[in-house]
Length: 496
Image (cartoon, rainbow, N blue to C red; front, side, top):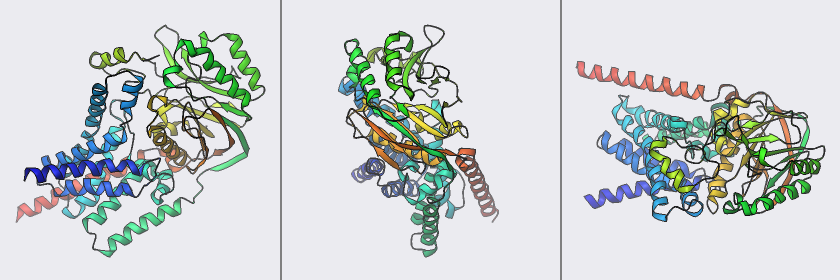
């Protein structure tokens, strides 16, 4: 009996881990429902709430170990942590993340609900609500949302401009739950097929309007190894790479990646900045650079239009826990001291910041994993006509992290109906259109400049207008209706 139970839990973890293939770079979206069936069925058939929570936790552990395993690379390869310690920290974070599907499973068995709706509606709603909580609590870490697996071209992606990826994930789970609950009933298959066909139709809807002529853009990929980027001995060479790429660029807007200049702007020789401006000429040069604040301990991960000092600078507002700031320093401060990360302890910028004004383009900046947060990217609307992401994922070279983040940028483009430009250090540098399609990209770990065109877009998608509010309201009303219905049925049953 024990061996059978252990084998069952191992299978759950394996099916959770299999979800990684549904995301980029493979984009095998239909594999996600297969993985989710395991969570739904294990939760629904568990003998009690505690067993359901255990099943949900084991599935979640497999899910997150597979989808965020690349954190090990940053800690061990570039952070210098011993392998066992880096693996332990990665497992610890995965263990924390697995608490959310476990909580959803536990509540799914504890809350009263009409029996016929528990599997197809209550469990999907609780699961997706737990995903939202994961993306919000303690600044949030919404990496690998199930809805993102359907971006950009699987049918349910058509709902992203309306409900965002949280809504896409909910519809995916509801459809899966309908089939799992009563797969022999033809009406369930018809309902799910209708849901998917409607999504496919929505993929062809133009939610925003192109304005003006296409803009020529040049997106630099500097390909500077992480262990060289912050070394003093390589500083001059890093600056030389930037200059060469600006000279090579042919676009009207030139973008260099996150921390393209690996020092505070105030510490860069003025003659070098003038040389960069001369190389850009009348074109706009936008780049990532650390910015000093008013005090010695106040500094920002920033971006600016170097060729136009009158433009406001962008200061990253959603910082990476353990990468750019230390949550609970009394508990985790040892990690920063051990890793000796450069420029750790950044300050936060304002939640809403003005886009860069470059001719007819209103370019809204986001840095690194800020493009994981759909509602925050939508804050730039309706002013922004185009989005730009500055990233440096050299910390995770050799993994799928850059490809996964590219897919999240595709989700943000689709949700907002805006082009997304991505300039990264080692990849994935790309031009993404307003439908979330990658129009052009560079191979990873290659030093070159991506030349292409992007189009300014105006107007608002429903998601751009309301962000996550509609789907949160749908979940709340669904849960209230289910719980009240379950309580009434229980009361009626007890009355007899």
